[in-house]
Image 1: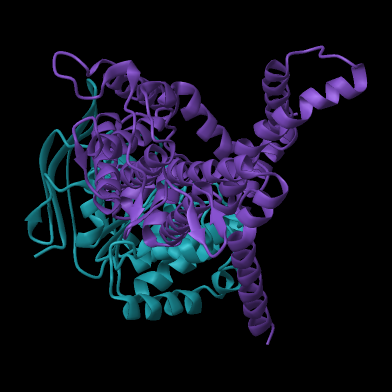
Image 2 (image 1 turned 180 degrees about the vertical axis):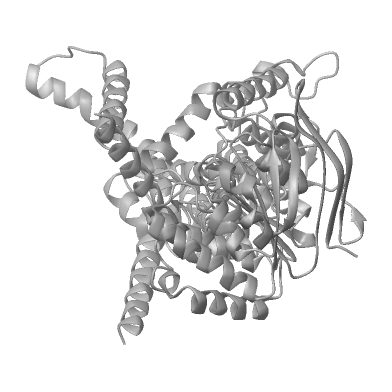
Length: 361
Length: 236
C-alpha cells in the first residue's frame, strides 16, 4: 500500500519535473531574456561534464584533474568534421558519436599508464595529460595545419536535425523561436540520456565493483574483479560523456579554440562534483547548475547593488564576482564538506571520519 | 587426488625468506587447521595460495593443476576463495550488496538468489540488517557477512585467515560455530588461527608452523594431546 503510494508520488514528481523542464526556456525567456536561456544551455553542458567526471572521481574514486581534455577531443572532432576548415560537413549524428568514441579512446589512453597510481600522484599525471592535449591543439597548425592553432576553428556547423538547423530561429505560427531554445531541447535530451546512463551504471554490478575498488582493491580482486579493466571502463565511460558535451559545445558556440580547455575548466568541473555531493547523481546535477548560474547571477547583481548602496562602484564587478564566488566555495567546504546534497553512503563516510576525529580528541 | 597439494613452497619478501619450503595437502571435504605464532608465515602462505604473493619456489597444485600464472582475480572463478585477515568486507556497501559482491563473477541469477536465501537462513541477523551499511555492524556480524559472501563465491576450497582476530571471546565461540556450519554445508576449508585450541577442536587435521617451516602435523586430536603443542600454543 505504502509502496504503491510511493510509486505514485515518484511518478507525480517525475511528471512535474518533466513539465517544468519542458516550459522552462519560455518562462526564463519571457522574464529574464534569451541570454539567460543561453546560460541554462551551458548549465546543461556542465551537467553532462560533471556527470562524466563523477563516474571517474565519484564512483571509481580516481582523482582526475585533466578531464577537460575529453571535452576538447569531442569538440575538436565535431569542429574538424563539420566546418569549412577541412571543407567537411558531416552530420551531427556521425560527428557527435565519433567525438564520444575518440574521447573514450583517449580515456583508455590516459588510463593505461596510470593504473598503478592513486590519489595525488594520479591527480598530477592527469593534470599533465589535460595540458598536453591543450598544447597539442595549440600547436598542431604546423607543419600541417590540423587544428588551426591558437586562432581556433570558426564557422562550425550548427546541429541540423532533418533539415531543421538549430542555429537559426524557427518560425512557428507568428512567433519565432530563437536558436537558444532549440539547443536547449537538444541538450536536455542528451543530458537525460547521460543521467540514465550514470544511474544505470551506479546500480549495476559495475557500480558496486567501483565502490569495492575504492574501498579495498585487494579484497575487490579477491571477489574476482579485474581491477585493470574496471578502472579503464571508468575512464572510458567518463570520457564518453565529456566527448558528447564537447561536440555539443562546438556546434552551439560555432567557434572553438584551445583557450576554452584550460586547467581552470577541469577544476571547475571537479568543484561542481565536490560541492554538489561526490558520487550522488542529484547532488552532482545540483552542483553543476549552481556553479554555472551563481557567477552569472553575481554578475547581474553586484554592479547595481553597489550603485544603490554606495552611489558609486567601489570594486570592479568582475573582480567582486570572483571574490564572492571563491569565498562561497571556501565557506561551503568548511560548513558542509560532504556537499550540498550527498548520498547516504558518503554522508556515512563523513560521519565516520568526524567520529574518529572526535575519539582522537 | 588431493584437492590441494603443496610441495616445497618457498616465499621471499626482498631478501627475507618468510616460507622456507613447506609441504602440506588438503583432501576434499576436510577442515584443516594451520596454527603457529605471529610471524610464522601463515598469512603469507595463504596469500601465496590465492596468487596475491608470488612464490619463489616449489609447487602448488590445486584441483590437479599448477596455479602459477593464474591472475589473482581468476582464483575465485576456480573455487579458491579467501576470507582475508580483518575480514575485508566493504564497509560502505550494504550487507546485501556485500553478498552480491561474493557472486560478482557469476551470472546464474536464480541460483545466486537461492543461495542468498540460504545464507540468510544460516545467519538470520544478516537478513534483518540487509539494507544496513556493513561498516556499521558489530565485529561478529561483519564476520558473518564475510563468511556469507565467501559462500556466494561457491568455494571448493575456502581459506580463512584468523577469523577470530580482534573479537571478544563470546563472539569467537560464535564464529567457530559458524565455521562448523559452513563446513557442514560441504565446503573444504583451510583455517589459519592463533586460537589453537578452538581451531584444533573443530578440525580433522592440523599443521604447526614455526618460523617459515612446518614442524608438526597430524590428526587434530593427537595435536591437541601433544605435549609440545600444549606447551607452546595452548598455554598449559
